[in-house]
Image (cartoon, rainbow, N blue to C red; front, side, top):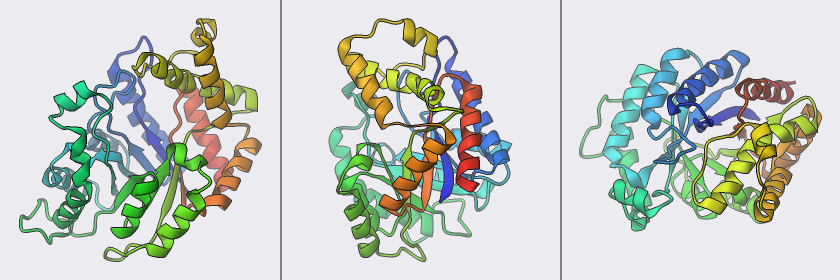
Length: 323
């Protein structure tokens, strides 16, 4: 499988948000050096634990520090933007970094009512997603009444971040699909992906492409990898309790904290689902997932508090997939 990274610019307790963005750029440089093919960044608005709200700006910085690796968004939330503005932003990126830019798209309109109000969007904004997608493609391929500039000399690849319904949308619009989250555990997923490949309607010269996105943590042994996966699992569990997604905490601070029974259950369940372990353990889990889905690409969206351990995990994952 092709191997990629998705970095969400996770903030860390006690450090400024700017440090998270600096770490994302440094991780992209490292990913290119160890041989990853693709590096994507995310769009999240007003989330305490995530510093990246503007993928196009962050990608410009990453593109300036790298030379080969593909860069892209995982993803731009199309209902929050005018399609013309999205097209212009990514056409500029493509002009600056020719042939390296991907535009991954999602349909989220923000997790809370205050955020949606600040963005001047309501939940219903997602209802026009497919119309917005058609409009965006028109700007990107030059078929729209208004010409988006700079005019591209090539086709800019677009990807769709999807769950069950989105997988069908990707097939209708001839787009590669990125699948992550709870749908990966669904017994129906293989059938969904078979239908996607069967019903795919090519856009220009596009072909079906399935990317699986999930957290993958590799360490010397299973216990160490689970410890590295703990900060993200803890943050997710705490967010369910408080309604706020927090910065990553050090493992020692988490172990010393009070663990309400519900948080403990959620953390343990998250760690059980995580692909975290020794190279041998991770290889078995990835092989099973590849066999079950026929995925063309694995996009690791791993986060942990220890940045050095994160880079070591990235290198180890690259070694085991290519070895």
